Image (cartoon, rainbow, N blue to C red; front, top):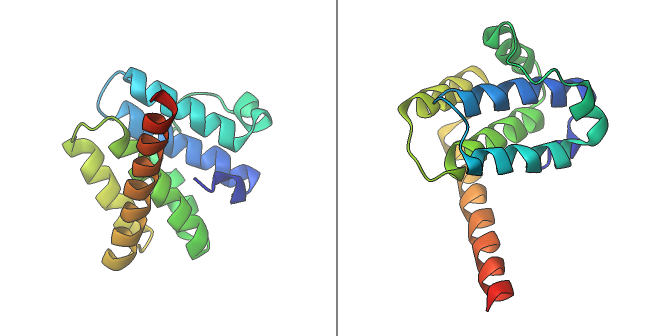
Length: 136
């Protein structure tokens, strides 16, 4: 969500975080593969073609890159990482710990985290409702 608002470099760096998040618990599930395809669609074909499809050499460097970003960029990054972590409905401790790290290092407050997570829940609810309406 809102990835189109990021600069080209921010999109490429976000993809590093997204790939890391998806790979953190092992082989990507079918749901995660669909999610990453949706992310690629939002980011844009030219960015995806430029991306190397492998994790950054240093996830620490990637996180550090976003530390200096404005708060809107930090919020978009965190929002999308939360969305990735919640997409497959499986709780994973490694994903949770990674999100906590991102939250801390990017200065996401507990209140902002709650608001961003609610956006993810609301978006999922709308998508599920739309699927029910379409199917029946």
